[in-house]
Length: 160
Image (cartoon, rainbow, N blue to C red):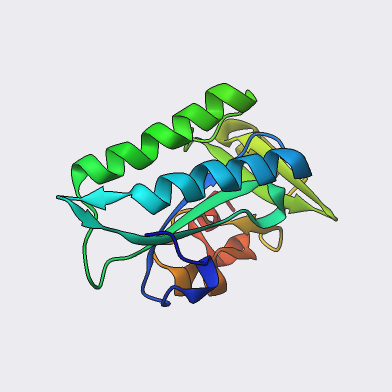
């Protein structure tokens, strides 16, 4: 069952998929429609899953799931991964590679391989105060409060 992202509780589980490039406004509309259609029919062992999607900065796909009534199962998670893989193929983006880092450089969001990020740390092109996106947060509350933070407050801190 698709619901607005904002209507989900702070305990809702989240999956964050950073895009290798920004989506256009038209692509965001198409992707939102595609994911919302999927969420409308998303089930686990035949039970509807209450979930929503958000696309902050036209750069991330965030799926949130209220597991208070029905938890995700391996098959339901696989189905959500399949829709993300379809989006990757359709729009020519990378969404599933967890070895990349997204961070802010001024008003821009930069997406770099982890190795390049480490090099940028060494050359001080990024600092512990650089705003990074901590895509490892697990629920909506953490997404709202700990997703977009200075590097020293996230898992990135061990590179400084």
